[in-house]
Length: 288
Image (cartoon, rainbow, N blue to C red; front, side):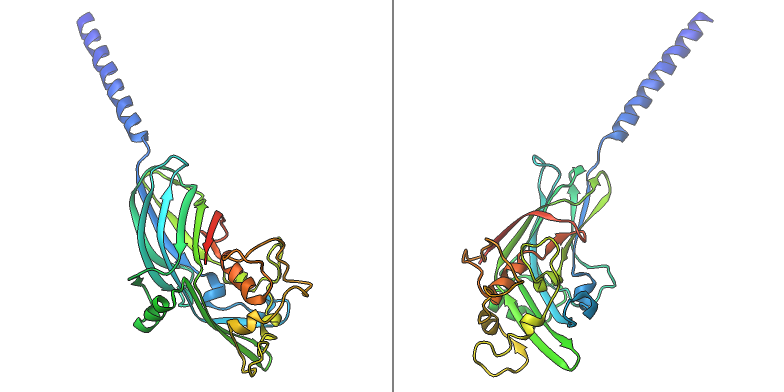
C-alpha cells in the first residue's frame, strides 16, 4: 500500500507540474496583427453642415485625396517596429458608412501596448491607387500632392468652390493606439479631420469652424471674382488686421511667419492627422 501511495503521489505531482508548465506557456503574450486603415469621418464623406460653422456656410467635398504610407507601429519606446513603406492614394470623400478604407494588415506584430504608431502624408513615386482613377493618380503625382481637396461651400444662394493641392510632407508620430496586442487584431485607423482646414484660430483650444473670410477672398488678388477660391486669392488676404485667425508665434512649413490666409490654411493641413478617431499624435513633422 505504501508503494502504491508513493507512486500515486509522484504521478500527481508530475501531472501538476506539467499542468502548471502548460498554463505558464499559455499565459505568454502572443504576437498579433495591426489592421491599418484611413478614414475622413462624416465631415469628409457627408460634408460639414451649416450648424457646425459660425457663419452659416455649409461645406461639401467632391474629393479629398491623400497619399498615405510608411505606416509603422511599435509597442513601447524600445519595441520592435512593424510596418509597411507602401504609399497608397485614397479618396476619403467616397462613402464607407463609417468603415474607413483598409490599407494593410501588419502581421506578426510583437505583443505589448502600442503607444507608438505613425504614418506619412506625402507624394511618392508609383503609389497604389486604392479608389482613385488614373487621371487623379497622375495629377497627384505630377503636382507632388500629399493632400488634394476639391469641393464647394454654400450659403443661401451663394456658392464658392475650391480646388487646393497641398505639397507639404507630413509625418505623424507617437500616435497612441490605446490597446494591446496579445494574439489579437488591433485597429490603427489614421483619421483625417477636414474641419481643421476651416478653423478660425490656430492657437486657441476651442476654435470655431468658419468660411466667410475664405469666401470673401474671391477676387482679392485683383482677378475677377468668379466664385472659385484660389491660393493666389487666399495669399492676398492679410491676417494681421484680423481679430480672429490668430497664429501666435507659429510658422508655416517653410519657416516663414504666417501673415496671409494661404499660409494659414497650409499650416492647418499639418494638424489634420489623428488616430482612431479623436486620438492625438504627439509629434508632427512638416516639410515644405
